[in-house]
Image: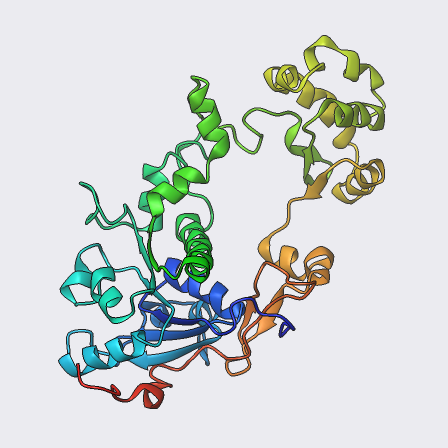
Length: 380
């Protein structure tokens, strides 16, 4: 899986982040060729080293998030370690941290502190609510952000409770935006010579990840829980088959005409109730009856074959293992294996010139690279 072209080769990153959002971002950077130096608490390290699931080789969670990095131990309150870190940062292009706002300054590791050491540093801060404002120092975890962003209130079925998305989506999305912000700032630095402080508030990111809900709100509607259907398009939902559920996704009139023909009900395309996407959405219950008269008499496999042949977007509802190791996922070459632990993880989602970028380094043991950064090269 090693790439022939890694877009961030030559970039050096000092990574103070822990657990998920920051490490997810820096794993993306490491896959693209950046040298990522993970700075960890002596003796304990990143908390994710102690989060399951575990094998005899350690945490599979840690491996996936910290592939391709180096690890050094440093006591951030120790003067000698602090001097050593400043010396390291002087050789870096990027710093990533997810301390609670104000903590980096107390440790002498704020953007202002490090800009004095490396004037063109790109400094990324990930937090729940940003670096400024009345909520800045409030602690936040993914579930808190999902609840505060309105995402939870608009997820689930109408007769059920607000529902958490089945992944730490606020953390992961913040990591993606952090990698994007860092890459953008590196390009800006290349063209201007200026560094930048990139502030990544998880709440802002999670709000930005809801363009459909934002459009509903802008139009004066309150986003609500609608189950598996799309809030404004139909048919765009799960439908009953003889042996399970099938997704059908139709978002334009031409495709709906094809669906009507495939169902053996061409008259649906000219039915006033279903003439436009808006009409279909308003009459979704009636449309479901028409569709399920066809789908409930056939298996999911049969329906996928029928709809694939017609060019109608569809899918069975897979579990994660089926998604990754099934015929579609396995054809994508999605997984890699850590050469030391043997843990499998999902590789970089982007391809560069047709190749999936990946670092050759395994996830590091705690302090594995201490000797490479043993002492500052000058007194500070």
